[in-house]
Length: 386
Image (cartoon, rainbow, N blue to C red; front, side, top):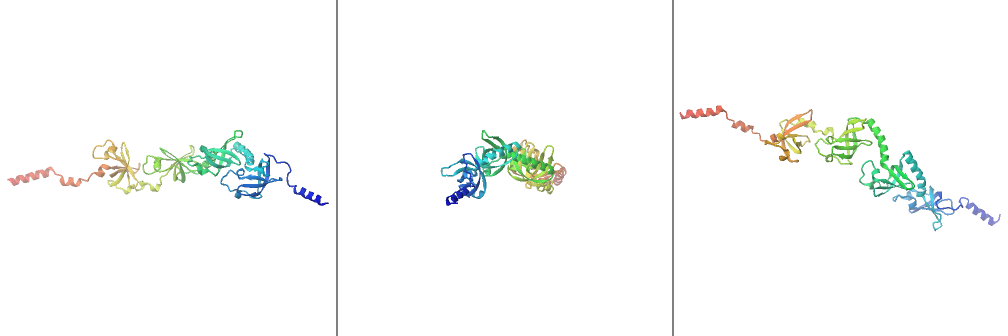
């Protein structure tokens, strides 16, 4: 065999591993990474020239370090954007290739009601821009969570579990819902919670919302109500005097209605109940108190130990009072006399009138004059004149 034939055979053998078919725009190919840098990835696509995947065609995560994510030897599926980029290379896209496969995944997820892991790329007007394996989608702010989200930025750049809410390939419309995913998880948690909840249990919860009549506490799967009367031993007019939305709180389970799926809760620690110390007080004792609220029947006052009670309008002053606001102001410090303790109703009553009046019994005793004393003095005077 002559030298020329040997060279021909060597060239033929060298070209064996390569496809000589012309690569066309839109072709989907399998490739192997041969080089990685921070701006692009070079891929062997079994062709006479290599393929290049620019960073923007490799990932839509602006924070991703592709030198950490991709390595020499990794196999990737790509689509040809340009068969010749002008420099003798094939311009490729992994994102667009992924999108073709991802379309089937989205259709199946919508049909089977299965969650997908999606990337929240950035905050946009009304919600989050979402990426799923090269497909672009949107998550409205109302579908991000089952509770109000004040700062959408906290989700930016994070992988989220979400359900496909709507998909229209022709209209290029893809809507995701994280709230729907959380709802499914909460249903499972709710089932477990209802099976294990018992009155008297102590749980950790998060304040979800406030109303004029109480606070709704998220227990992780279910929401319970802590009535305003169960938020504090002190009398309050609004729940926001005690808690705020988002607060982590310890709650006591008062009642569980499994049929109606309702839970009654309390934030009041039994050990802090001021009523436990009520009998440290003495009937008739004089104490410092603060006017907490004015009502038609009189005034609600609170002692320093947290115990509060009623001062009836007739016990406010020795003078006639028709309106407590004419005499007292909320926040005013007063002296009160303890009149009564009702253990059954856990109520106490006070008197400001008797708490402020001076004890005049001494003077009454000294100045009291009887008829006998008066006539006795007159008889003695009459005898002296005779």
